[in-house]
Length: 298
Image 1 (tube, rainbow, N blue to C red):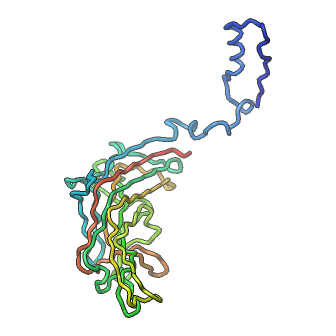
Image 2 (tube, rainbow, N blue to C red; image 1 turned 30 degrees about the horizontal axis):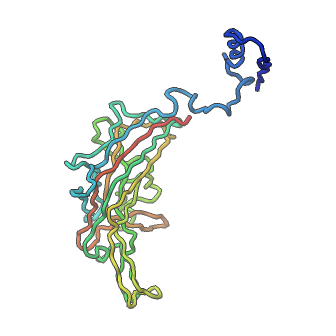
Image 3 (cartoon, rainbow, N blue to C red; image 1 turned 90 degrees about the vertical axis):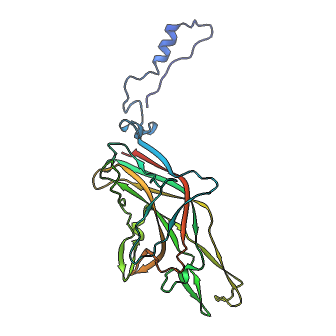
């Protein structure tokens, strides 16, 4: 890199504006080239194009503010034979709290841009009785005696949907690498394989523990059932298109349950478990936030 050589001001030498201007001119570069600047000194993505790295950003409230959880919204668990229709997160009046991305939407450019989504929500999974004891439920395990116990792996599911059709926001579908949990993968079981859960968050439905069990058996011990209680859950989803531009007009979070891990043909799934006893499983929720960031990476 070029080096500036100029003698310092000598003691007693007069200093005036002309002299100072001449000195400062040494540090003024009218051109940038390989002789006077190295690319390591520049944050290159900031100079690649305008409007720099951040192209768009947007956020909105999910659900509704209810700090005391006095009147949460309630989603009932699925009891059908195939797969549930997910419920969009809504405000206190039941209006879905979608994140609209403007009339023209956001165009995420192929091999140049990335879309980043972050969200959070306050939730409370509830249940009555022992739902996992339903005949044929996949949420149960059998301990020696025999004793039917909960696997404690049952969960509610929350995932991202988007509208890539128009700003009317009526054509909601799952984004790339996210399934709708509607695949009939074996017998009467429906769900999505784990590679198709990139925009999914699992919310534990309940917990059962064994007090004073011994040697892998209940013995004289006791099964203790616990709710997980109110908690904050969150999720993320990133996409950098590699098969063409994607224009996105809106985003939302949907809820459904109850699911459970399942393996079939060497593939891991999240499968719906509609065979739950009692029918008293719900997911209560109040408020949170969803944020979307559109950034240029090349």
